[in-house]
Length: 199
Image (cartoon, rainbow, N blue to C red; front, side, top):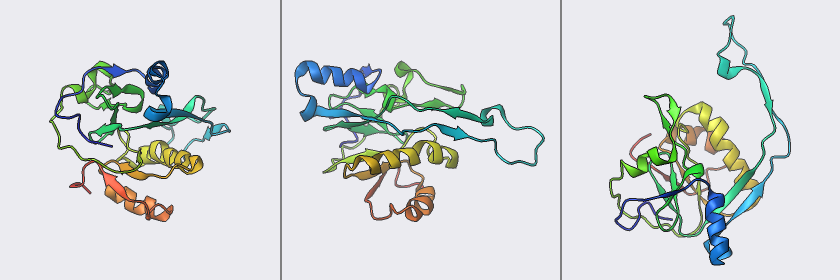
């Protein structure tokens, strides 16, 4: 896996990895190029209201139940990763948008594919090649403890269930990783941080 696109900025995007999988099928390269493996958590997730001394809770914390559907793991041979939020690129350098969500804190919204920072903040990073399989765990906001719990830990669970051997690629937040990752038994994995200078 690489962190650059052979000196050129990325151009174009797939709305989802399923579009890329369709292209692989048309070129008859699906197993050499990668695969999309369906994943089912198998149960309804129940989100209960937090205990609080406040008389009301934030609307985003209202209790609800959710049956996750359409989950998958994607393997992408010679895939690339860019930035602290772990934008995933195809080997040709096209953004895979559903694997590369990005939040704009100023506008308080998720960005559309054509607005993704990879297209306008590209800084021609040094190419770093890693042997083996690298699991991209990072996600926009995964340096935040809440997003660590709801975005990163489920990815770890999916990987554990899949049985795919991997390195871990994660956001710059070494402190959360050190505390949680070690206590959950992931200390033995080789970890690659998107921003090794931060902690």
